[in-house]
Image (cartoon, rainbow, N blue to C red; front, top):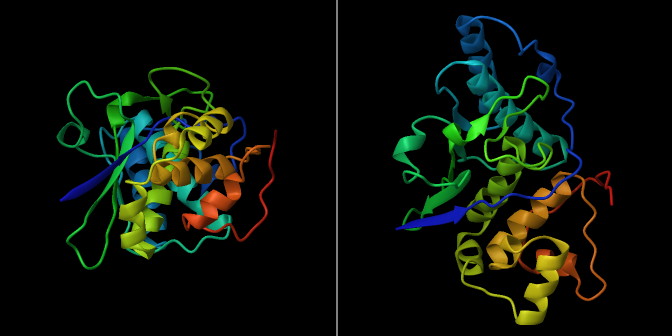
Length: 244
């Protein structure tokens, strides 16, 4: 049985920046063989975190920047103080085999519930990203604010699902079935977005992504952080710089 969690865009206006040195690589120029070397480097770096990555697609400039986006997002998470659990894999290849034709979904995470050891797999809908020479990450081809609709934000969201699945599979599976009452749902929609109000699993992933993006989340009616903690969302060990 496959447990699938689809990503919807997160609304961010500040990206939490990694200080990992390799982000300074000259990625906006070069030949395909140079792209290949750099993508291999990103895969090797991710392997030091215990992440299996399959980042090759067309080995063009968009593929390179997508690989960089995935790499940087995971190192952002590490630099925020998280212990990245072993068993996560991320795929930028063979999107046609993992997304229905015409699907607008940008990413999803699935786990096989019958496995004793959970190994979440994150898939990115590679054709739906586009390269912008003025940005250090790929963005959604559907448009929108590039600081919002980009691959780094997608990874933040999907990591939260993967983290919960590995650390407490029973809790993770149950959150997808837990809905909010109307009052709470309306407030979450107001403070975050409607997708976060779908169920507790998506709330955790959206809340985590907002925090990673440096967005201040506030409600005068409900305690959003309390809900997040009750759902056993990934615990932030470092204080992040937040913006309104």
